Length: 177
Ligand SMILES: [Zn+2]
Image (tube, rainbow, N blue to C red; front, side, top):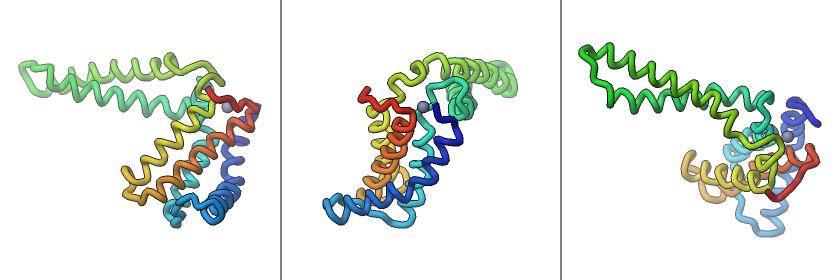
C-alpha cells in the first residue's frame, strides 16, 4: 500500500503526462480545454491534492488528520454565529463568551464527527464516483470560484479527476462505486 509520500510524489511527477493527454484531447479530439498558465498552475495543485485526497477515509492518514481541525473550526464558528443570535445575557461580553462556549462544543462534535461519519477505508471514497465528484467540483471552481472561462474549468475538472484516479490506480483499487 503506497504511503503519503508515494501518493503525493506520484502526482508531482506525472502532471506533465496529464498536461500532455489534455493537449492531445484538445488538439486531436476537439475537447474545448483552455489551458492558460493560470489554469495549469491551479490544475497542478488540484492534481497533486487529488493524488492524496482519497486517503481522507483513513483516520491515521495525514490528509485526514490535517483536514480534521479545519472541519472542527468551521463547524465551531458556524455554531458560534448561530448561538450569538440566540443568547441574550445581561452583559454583551457574557453573551459572546457563552456563544463561543457553545461554538467550542460544536467544534469538538465536528472533530469526532468527521472521523465517525467517514466511510470505511477504501470504500466509496476510493471510487471513480468520488473521482468524478472531485472533478466536477474542480470544474465549478474555475468559472464560479476563480472567474475562469468554461474551457479552463473543464481543464481543471479533467486534471482533478485524473489526479484522483491516479491514486486509485496506485492503490490497485479502481472501482466505479
Ligand atoms: Zn488510498
